[in-house]
Image 1 (cartoon, rainbow, N blue to C red):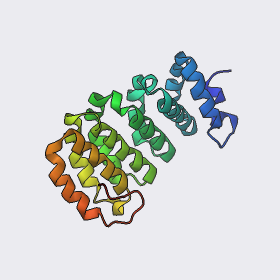
Image 2 (tube, rainbow, N blue to C red):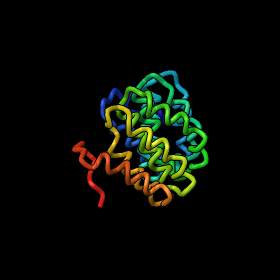
Image 3 (tube, rainbow, N blue to C red):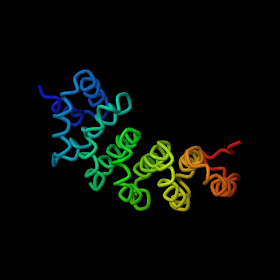
Length: 200
């Protein structure tokens, strides 16, 4: 039995259990990831979503195993199937600290997802990718800053809590931005939205 045949959609499961089991197998035997990579190219979007979810589950534990598959995840961000996009960007967000150079090249794509994607989950993980990028160092923080700042104003502030945490990373790595960020934070300090708390 191939790894692909044991994925949730192939077993007729509606839970992630099958995919989690496959992820554990791949962690034990990383050579199995080649089959998952091939699955990412399938025309069967349920299968593609499963394979992307496997990479997400692996990245939660061993992100370095997923790094070589970054180039196969990026094309999935333009697929119409929402689940495929959110699993792909979730996996990307988890490996971002290991691939800052590659992320810097696809920042326009990620910014576009934050700005235009109709899925809150896709946008959340896109914002998280930028936040993780900002946490990587000064150069990355300065590149992330304008995207995070612009993102505060869209989608009725749905992603504000996550964005403000990302701005704290910018403060840490690029102190020259602190005054501007403090001004931004003060504007939202009275906001009662979930996830936004006053930072002492």
